[in-house]
Image 1 (spheres, helix red, strand yellow):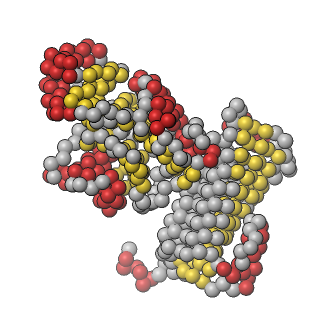
Image 2 (cartoon, rainbow over the protein chains, first blue to last red):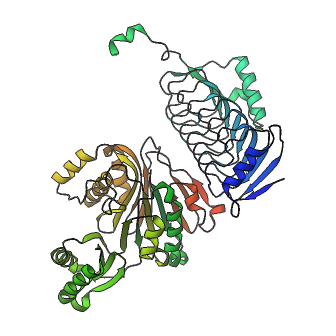
Image 3 (cartoon, chains in turn blue, green):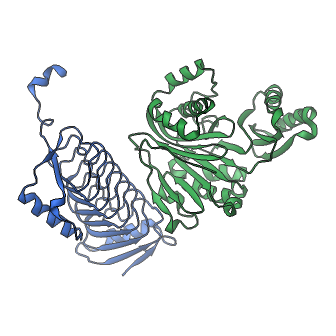
Length: 227
Length: 297
């Protein structure tokens, strides 16, 4: 069980060690004193597990492809940005654009996420225990965003095919984002996501579903005069 | 990109260490702003006395200025030299005479700040060098604000470095860029305000000074800024007794705050806060967009 204390070891040596493991490695890494470092455990490409004890800075777990990365603290901007696969868990809060452009895997934020959570998400699943900030899921293309608390302004603006589930209030919906019917397959999907995120005592029926009205992403000849 | 830090102490026991903490916070923000750095420190002050911080490079130029001022103000003038800055202390009633005499004796000198409590220092260079040149680590006080600059809207000069002080005991640091600063500067000039630079951040500082001159408190002036300033900004603002934070409605310029029983702290990033006492158990949060935060002693 390699342990990296970033008070005495460089961030580079940690990230290099994470990149040097065998492709099928299930090694377990412990990280102490992250002190808000940038790009911590970015580019993990093996099914290793990484436990980070403290809060991280920009782009923690960025591009994760198969790793299980847990932050016992809060995460700075761009956590799990462009995740491909694997799991990232933030025990505290996440700053702006958490899970941005993520293509796969599961991002669980147990606290709140701030603005632009899941912006341009492309297949990632994001589960937020608290609230999310404004402009979340902007231009989100696919994947699922589950929010147990409230959503800020302009949720799902210019949304493509991502599914948004919010249990609390939505301050305002963005352009072309509408509330949609919660059908049995959505309830089943939501139950699966909540279970994967380890959330108990919350029923899928408590959520509302939001998605694209699909009026923005095809050119409408009636609008030709506007160009 | 720029770095901002701020520390507002609630516990007087930490006051002797204010400069030490701010210096550490400022250095961590070097890679957000390596071209210049500056800071404002609010001390306890002395009743009836005002401080004028003067920026004037060169030992000879400083000696000439001090000789000239000594001849006019005699024993009423207190002097503390810190590298390119001089902190001059005079009775409150003599501030206008002092600034007029400085302009006359040393036209190259710049008034960095005027106030009962505040001293402002700024220079081009790495934050660690700027901090060391002025001896920030040994400064005491009630609250302080610092800035590391990566210039975008105007030249890398000491005049363009932050904080900007445009009123007694008032200062502002800014991360971002304003898009309506030319119009607003023109309007403020019409209203009788004066400017020392072409910098966009100075316009925000002058705007707040003008609003507070109308009788608003810092919080009310910041509320007005949400509608009147256009662009990207995270501001941290200091007054004699207060400390305020404001982010624009888009809020893409980063900000994180921490509060304990002993202090309120601001950083562009969490890593600026990691050396503060009790940070592990502090309440740490990200200030909301278009929301005014301010604390007063």
